[in-house]
Image (tube, rainbow, N blue to C red; front, side, top):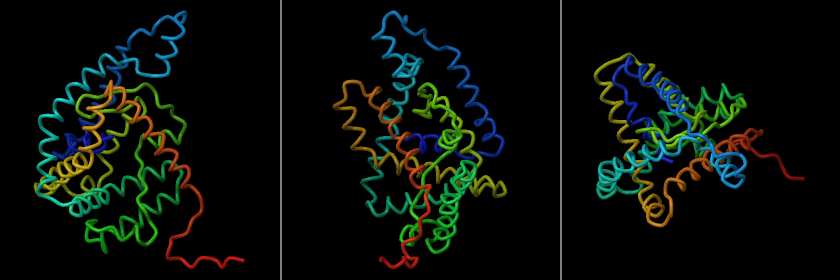
Length: 275
């Protein structure tokens, strides 16, 4: 559930070359992981074999190791920072921070929707970026939603899903967190589709990019302190719970994109009279 923020934090801009290297490393890591797939149980053992197929997690032993490592990083580093951040900020401030980092991602969403054949959603992303970047003072405020253009979330993994690419096996990547054989290709795409990447390289831009990605990660983690604590305290197997939640989230996102792909008009546009 924190995948987007985690990948942005560790993919912070330290120059175009570093972004390129990080981008091509992800598919290479995927290939290496898939090469070490565990052997499935024999088909004669029907119950175990069906459970194996349903989980679609052939790398579960390796995934659990990475989950354990990431969990320790979160427990001893990220979570304490997020808790301190909550103590020195208010919910309205955190909402404005969320609006700001969301606005920075709108150009990427515009391109994803165009590639996915969703022109209406692409138009919504374009209007949101223009309105929130100007009237919304760089995205600190979100007047676009009030005008009838709510946030429409997507990424390259969901675009591939629209093209018919199957989800593939579940992956828990070191540092980056939950993903899948299809969704992992969101990582290299996310490095390039930001306004910072289009701007000329400079020290000030690098500082801004580090600050934005760090703030995005901490702000997002702060919003999930209680839900994550509850899962870790009550779930018999937190790894399996997070795996299930991740898959449900991805399926829900894809369903919402398909549902939105219908002609609509903004709230402020005159509605036809009812007969």
